[in-house]
Image 1 (spheres, rainbow, N blue to C red):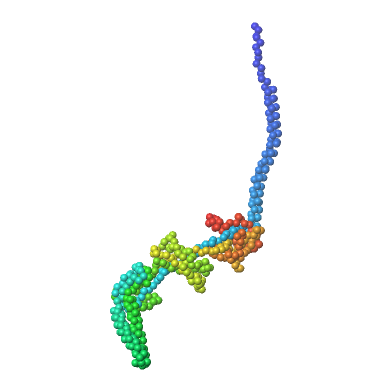
Image 2: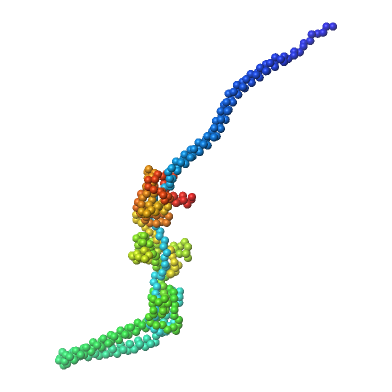
Length: 424
C-alpha cells in the first residue's frame, strides 16, 4: 500500500528573522546614540545657561538698584509747591464783652421816705415810667412858703412900679425933683429883682418836688432795686463807689447791645465803621447774631497794641444778655491780596524769614520774604515771591543757596499739599 504524499508544513525560518531584527535594533541604537551626542550638549548648555541666569540676573538687578539709589542720593530730593493768591476776605476771631447800650444808676434827687415802689428787678420799663414815690413833707412846705414869698414880691413890685410911673409923670411938670423920681424908679427895679428871685426859688423847689417821682430815663430793664417802703433816702448819693451807696435802681437798655473788642495792630487798618460782623455764643450753638462795626477809638493802645472797636447788635428778642462773653467774627477785606504759602515752607534765618526756591537749573535759591496776613497754617507773602516760583516745602535747616536738588513730583498748590498731608 502506497502512502500518499501529503503536503508538509514549513517551519519558520527563525534564524533569518532574528538576524533582521538585530540589524534593525542596531540601526535604531546607532541613531539614538547619534541623537544623544547632539542633544546632550544642548541640554547641558541650556542647564548651564539657566544656572548662569539664576545667578547673574539678581546681581544685575541689585547692581541697577544700587546705581539708582546712588544717583538718587547724590541730590537732595524735595517736594515743591507753587504759591497761589491769598484770599481777599479773611475771618478774624476775637473775644468780645457784651454790654448794654445804655446803663444808668438811679439816685434820689430829693430827700424823704419811700412811699411805694412800682418796679422790681427784671421789670421792663418805658422812658418816663414811675419807679418809686418819695414822700417829702418838709419840701412841700418849703414850696408853699416860696410861693407865698413870690406873691409878696410880686405885689411889692407892682406897687413900686406904679409909684415910679407916677413920679415920672410929675417930673415932667416939675412937681417933684429928679432925685426923688430916680429913687422911685430904682426902688421899682429892686422890687422886680426880688420878685424874679422869688420866682426862681419857686421853680427850684417845684423841680425838687417833681423828683418825688423817680422815673426811668430810657426804655430798659431794671437790674437792681435797693429800696423798700419807708426807707429814708437822701438827695444825691456817692456814684463811683463799689457799693454804689444811695443807688435806688439800676437800669440797662438791652434791646440794643454794645460789644467791645480789641483788634490787633496788624489788622486795625482793615476794620472800619460798617465792617460786617457776626457773633456766636456757647448758649446758642450754631446761631449767628449779625452786627456791624459802629465806631472805633482811632488810636492804638500803647500797652496792648490793639484798637478798641465797638460793635452794635440788635437784641430786640432778648437772646443776648449784657455782661456775657461772645466770640466776634470779623470779615476783613483786602483790596490787593498777595501770594500765600504754607507755614512749613518758611525758614527763619538771622537775616529774616526766608524761602527756598528751586530754579530752572534745579538749584536752590534762598530768598528773604515779607510776611503779611496770618491764616494759621498759611501765611501771606507780601514781597519776595513770584507766582511762578517753585518753593520747597519742609526744607531742611542745612539747605543752602546753589545746592542741587531733585524735585520728587510736579509742584502742587498749597491747598493740594495740605490735602495730601491730611490724607497721608
